[in-house]
Image (cartoon, rainbow, N blue to C red; front, side, top):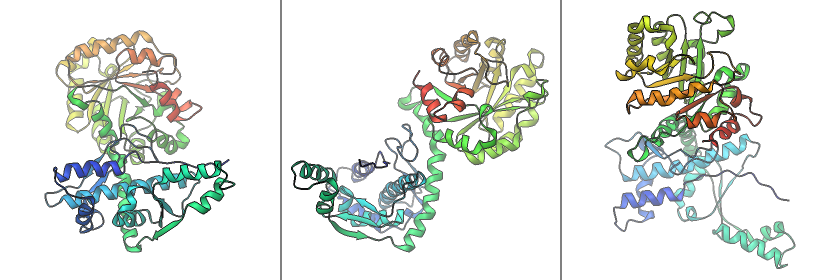
Length: 442
């Protein structure tokens, strides 16, 4: 049999059709005229970069929530700059697919282009330049129709095999070679393109929760790095990057606040290293003797949300708790408070009423120890927290014991984020498969 490795882009020509409708404002503006305006601008569209993932991303990262974007716009940019940026985004997306396939063991030496792109010599050259590979155009450019004709010719006995039919029916019309100078410029631009797609992921996922103007929070999974393979943490984080997640959960325990040497995890240096490896949002759960002393360094390390343990303060240190929450928010991080299984939701009613909290982490297991069974009675606190929040945008996390047996009940509780460690990182299909199996239970 014949096998092939497939990669694809969800939006290519459709992005330009959308843009033409927006930019032409009902006039008779043609694609050729828009190409002319774009060709008058330099590689990189004078600092404007776009993402073509208007309908999600397929290759090399599958992300149904991915969306298009522009960055670098100024008042000096014109319609031609926008058009070029979108054309370049499609080409850079093609390069991303090609590199993804190459990493999987399927390198390409040329690009065979069919369809509407063949009608634009400018875009064909851009594909060659942006991908650094020759572009081949065939005499007959309707590839699906030609494929049908090839199969029909074999079925009718005109040719003895598909290979023979292809040899006789697929004929090259022209070959477009990459320009070395522009290829070098695009190589540099591609590095920025890849950074941009990773950087906007948490933002567009967050926007997907409020699309349409309503606070429609989609329930998500947050992998807990406490259960990851620390000897290969970079690989574990990479697997999370390629999964349908927006947050990573990091437990920073000092082994003193909970007096057990097994509760010592890692500190700011590890958070800094994790941040270098990912653009995902980092929720850092802090169980230490003096939480306030960690605020500035955690902000500097790239923590997005700092979650402090309520029991570190308790009722007798209420003012210290509030001061700590205020300091976290002043640092630019979101502020969270975590409740141990036996602590009631009412314990933080004052902080919720004062609008000090962005996140509440409800522990359904005792803190720091992996592979514990979930304490299902703690799930009742989710609804209680949402009632105490009185409509405020507070993300409620359920943390601990989440697996394929417990996830449905946890989702039904109304939690926004479920933290899963042992199940996700121990899944035989890998992190992505583990996350997908949990999300199917929503």
